[in-house]
Image (tube, rainbow, N blue to C red; front, side, top):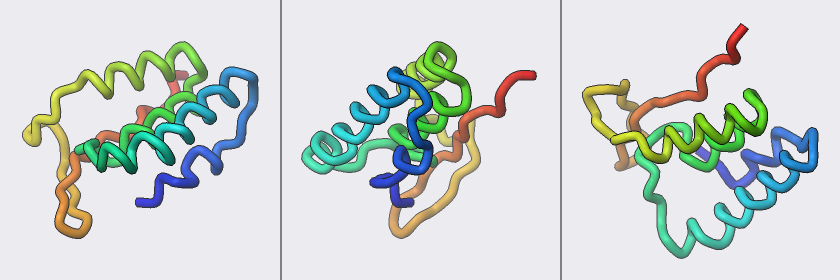
Length: 98
């Protein structure tokens, strides 16, 4: 799970995307290393945000990201995956509405 280049894979498509990418990069490279890995979900919360914003656009992507950050991490609600010595709850970004 290498999130360091996760936002780089998505490429900005607007000013909002570029700004969001800048904030996510600052989070990944400045705040997260000092604070430690805290997200119990897979993909990580920052990767989820990058994917949600890219897939659903700024409004719905921000709503999905906010909901993800506020969501309880109850193991009975999600499938579990194990990576190394940590367990993660699998909660992917939903597919776009049609």
